[in-house]
Amino acid sequence: MKILSRILALLLFAQVVLAQEVNDGNELLNRPAERTYDIILDSGYLKVGVYENFPPYSYQVDGEPRGIDIELGRRIAEEMGLEFKVHWIIPDENLGDDLRNNVWKGHYLAKQRLADVMLRVPYDKTYAYMQDSTGEYINEQVVLFGPYQQETWQVAYDPEQLDSVDTVAVFQYNRIGVEIDTLPDFYLTSAFGGRMREQVRHYTNVADAFEAMRAGEVSAVMGMRSEIDHELAMPGNDGFKAAGNGFPGIGKQVWDVGMAIKHTHRQLGYALEAIVDRLVKTGQMSELMASQTLRYSVPGYYRDFLDEQAIARAEGEL
Image 1 (cartoon, rainbow, N blue to C red):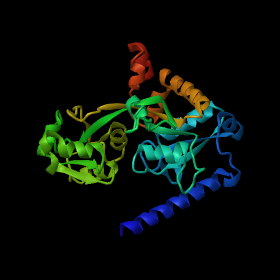
Image 2: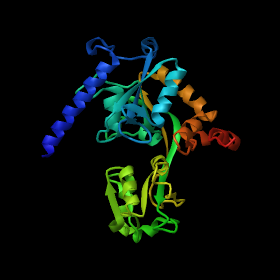
Image 3: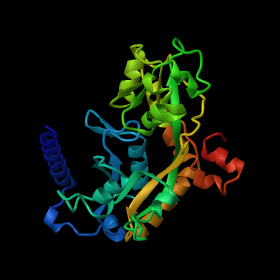
Image 4: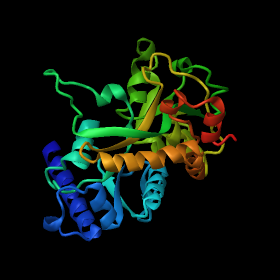
């Protein structure tokens, strides 16, 4: 059964690949092997890689791309005087696979199907310079750069079931929903010696977990803050609240999100980095987030050198 499911998944992926190639208006055999900076400018468009079906970052409504990464991609392309083209990314086993399949090498079913730039990539120096057992850099084929957002974990709760959530310890006795096989899932089932494990309920995604909270099946939901903000803005969820608790022992509470390009395309990277840097510092990135009903935090990268006034301006508080 698993083999059949895998075959069907690969066939579906192949169909998506072929459809996108046709939409690009390029003959596969005639496409240049490398879309360098000059070739991108001459082509008149920028292909921005974003994750498929990943609200509020990138998703579709009636066939139209939506989400904060879609809006950022449009803005970047506009600043470059180019047309925005979306390159949908179907998640693989891990980030390394996604970078290989969509940024520098291509999937084995479509070697030429590559994005010019990929968004929603953790901007993490440890990951960027990770080495294998032989000392070789695992990610030497890509450049991680241009942090544009700081993400964090967040809990939303139903005040009719819980008075407050000052600590995750309340979930020793109250049910909480999480997306299966995510860090919140692993955290809540293992923290405090596993004392919250029996209260954790698993769902396909955060939206399904919120549906369960509306039905009274769980008293809270844990996910990324932008996912939680997106759901809290939805009709029917206005009675729920965002909690202010921390997550002791979770490891990484906050992290920067940036972009990735192939290591040979650094000229493109410099141009993109300058655009994103301006969007962040002038508060335009904060405005983009607000237009999607999402809170914005300046990446930690900028907090190392911007003063308090500059950070406030970037976060739309001035």
